Amino acid sequence: DVGMVLELSNAVDGPVYIRMVRGQIPRLFPAKDKTILGKARILSLGSDITLLTSGICTEESLRVTELLKDRGIGVQHLHVTTLKPFDDHRVSEALAKARYGIITMENHTSIGGLGSCVAEMIAKFGIATKLIKVAINDTYLQGASRTFLMERYKENQLKVYNSLSKKKEDFKTITDGYVGMYVCGPTVYSNAH
Image 1 (cartoon, rainbow, N blue to C red):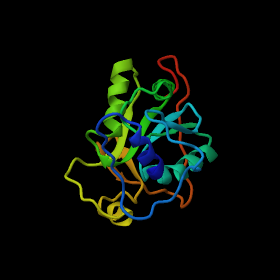
Image 2 (cartoon, helix red, strand yellow):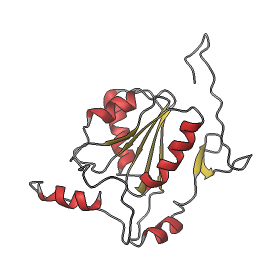
Image 3 (cartoon, rainbow, N blue to C red):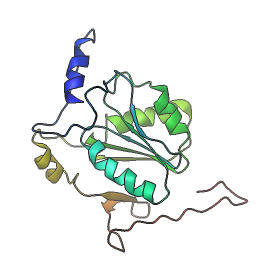
């Protein structure tokens, strides 16, 4: 997206802010698949979880979505390159159909990035689904190489939100290489949850 977003910025009438990682980054999308201002890329379809990613977190999350898919969990995965304008109808539709929750993953602070844009869209459309923001705790960030940043801000470790401790914690499987998920079916009191 880096080369494409630079091209895209020339078409914008007004100031443009571009934030990118230093050093080598892999090409995730074919050069012929052009980035479109304000449009997310749909990477997978599903209705259990909606996952929105940006930056270097997209590459990491592609691995996770494949694991979840292999376990029968449907993930609607969207890669978001541009945050302004943030009015893509495909994003709001994906948020509305998430049965179990919405997750954002970004190499940005938890305030003012993709997660905040998604939270505002959830509020705007009255979507009653849990949002989990996977991001760097609010701090002043340092610019550096991808490897340095991933290690410094612990973005190279899969974390899960523990609803009891109200904290993100390192994800450790009970059985190496296996992740399972239990979902309650519909009851007389509620939908599947």
